[in-house]
Image 1 (spheres, helix red, strand yellow):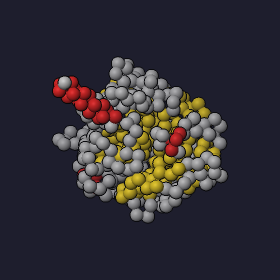
Image 2 (tube, one colour):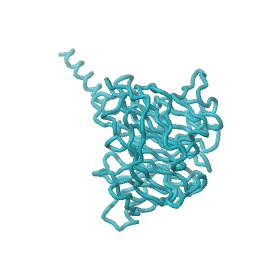
Image 3 (cartoon, rainbow, N blue to C red):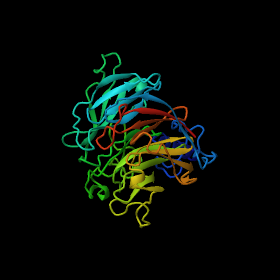
Image 4 (cartoon, rainbow, N blue to C red):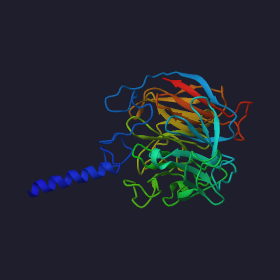
Length: 388
């Protein structure tokens, strides 16, 4: 009886850990497929990275099948609603519009209160709650007069256009702000936890200091508390040593990847592990230094300056701002199959956000009205891509 009771207790404990979002490999989330997990990244079903899946082809293709919408002002964050419509935030105005996936029609949803624009700050990342169908919550990462913070707002479609956002409920505050390097990307992971990429706000100290929230990747519950399984149970910090993270994506094996701005030499694509230190400001690019994790891929800053990141058809797709191109990084598990391949080079100007669709395609936004691009009459726009 005692042995049976102990066995039952062990099974119950294992089930509790799995439900809390732990990896089947080493007890941490984000390290690979989790037992009992049913959440999948968009486009993951036919992609590599899952157990038994084939590697992605060494070369791929990109076809722009249509321009969904045009004349957006400083678009930054993008989130997909159930059914496929997009929410797109304007960095400089703090407003969010809904863009119909069918015909690109724009409807103003509302304005996030307290947004203070300046330099690279303003309304940045957007995310939709995993339970949006019932809780109707939209999450926003934005700059205020004192910090960067994350808040959630209830979206009520029954109200008039422009008045559909409720009052912000702040879930995390105190992320350092600056005229540059505000980070800003937020996303819910396969474990249903909220992740945020932050910047070091132009200061060299925060990235290596465990206390400030700048220069980090953060992982938290939907209400902003440290998530179970974090390296420090009392902290939302998940990884450190980052300069300016603006891209987060999970592959079919539920591993977390991040794109990051370098300084003068190397931009980075990193495979994120809990507690990892990615080197900044001690190391930039592949340094081979003990105690720091080297990037999986790196680019000269003129060729990338990366922002958004998405996973589709077995590859990571990374948007380039200064590089004005879309990079494809084909994967075999945690390793690239071949050298990164560039698409759309110089065709649409600066590229900001990449979002995977349910059928394995991509949405891509341009970023030519952000003060550093050369906007045309139709900028900024959202492009629909077929990829392989």
